[in-house]
Image (cartoon, rainbow, N blue to C red; front, side, top):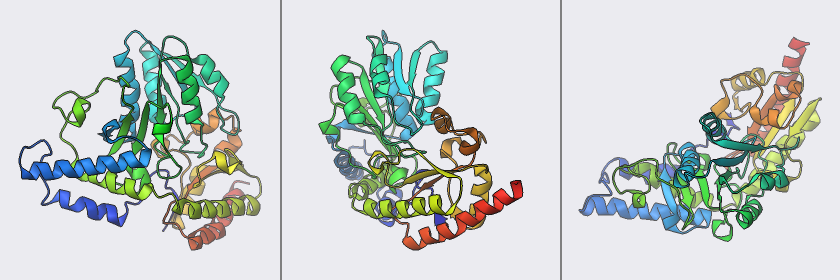
Length: 380
């Protein structure tokens, strides 16, 4: 099986699984307990928090563990609104992940004011329009760092500086698909809130973190015990947190991503050359895109058919966001980019990971052109 869907999830690294196992057996203590078992687990959680902080260029007390990217994104926005009840405005983009986009849709239906800033056909954000949308009633600006479907990077550090220079709105970044792929150093930015999820960088599912800059005011969503400094109640999912810490240690080393970039480039250029009427969705400039992601449209085909045929051939890919894979409509991200329908419906996302090999890319280059040609011949 050739796995080219790493933006959906990654395989947990062996060292991550090994680190987690003791906390599913003998190291079972509650970190809030005042005895040796509890103290040992509490110390392990502190170590994991420090590892995540190093990955993000943050202080350990700015890291709060969550159940993953969706909770972190939701909490950043809802918590900001709850802390500033007199403000009712959210600024975001048209290409955000569902965890932000659908939440903003719901908040708008409940009376909040939402401004969605558009992107161009290459997926680049209209930064001037975003800054112009910020006003005195803006509570939070939420902009992803890397698009999960196209890999396009937004200049979030620069945008944060500009937003903070003209308002006191909190600036939130969905960094779920950026962590472990590109450098992140939050201490050098004006970013207030940053979301990550462990399973995107070879950690376990069901755990993530929200970076909350010191001094940034957001209200907790869960109320109960005093866990996570009183910011997120509930007994910690210790084994998952340990897994997040171990995967953060791996993700902090970005050297393997250069190999990933080279393999992605080979795959992308090979497909664009070998298959007629094929188009890259997103930025051609590699510095403006994740090193692992290629979103390619095979015009006049159906992406779901390509996905199914490739799956039968032992190659795993995606047609868009895994969180939106059952709708059988053109991706909202590609729609926002004004990609023609005939291209958008034939789009495939190839997202490589640290474990992919050149032999796997060679096999994909052998199989994908044949599959596309067969599907086109049947529809033609």
